[in-house]
Length: 285
Image (tube, rainbow, N blue to C red; front, side, top):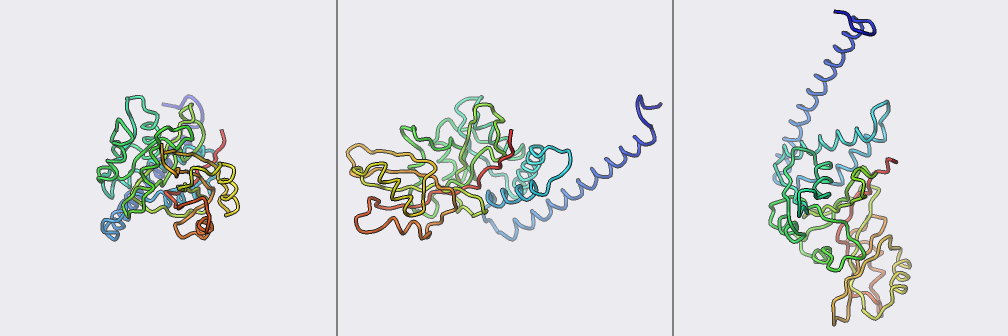
């Protein structure tokens, strides 16, 4: 039976080409799975999630992309691939703040991690953090820090312990307004962040309660740590407040700029990074 439009023989050949390409893609996916298995064996129980590495992979593919396939579709496909192969290394759950079935954080998590990794819905921030600390989840999904938070969750990760969770990612990584309300989430995990060449860092600082915000910002700028975001957690009756700032660079614990904040008469008792994340892609509308 002839096709309603076009040359039937030509269409048959094009469909055969699609089948050939599908088979090649499938072969490569199976080969990738075998390599991922070998990586898991070499790591011998090391971290499964590598947010920095994942971001670098997707950025590289976006930079080389051409043709009619939308870039957002490319990112979506590769996020699904990365999630599936993360599951190949071990089915680690993703703990997500989801007090109800319509949680936007659950939607962000599913978009980012794909269908293969199980989501662990949590009714509170504390449950998310407990799941990460206990190893029930490899990563937690929480609201990004906001200046107006009355009891911010980030204050619980300002310690220096080896297993203290750190902020390692920000969603949505593909940017845009896929969920309409510009919901954004932070990823927390018991990982040390990795630099990717385009990162931002959250710094926690303890500062004298008598120092003005203007002086704090001035001292940060003098040290090369101009804040893009600034939040305060004030403890009643204390001589010191906790600050959270976001700086547009990767900052490790031994960064020389942090040392500039510690001097005789400094308003800062201490300053330390509590996480860095790869900056999300800017794919436009």
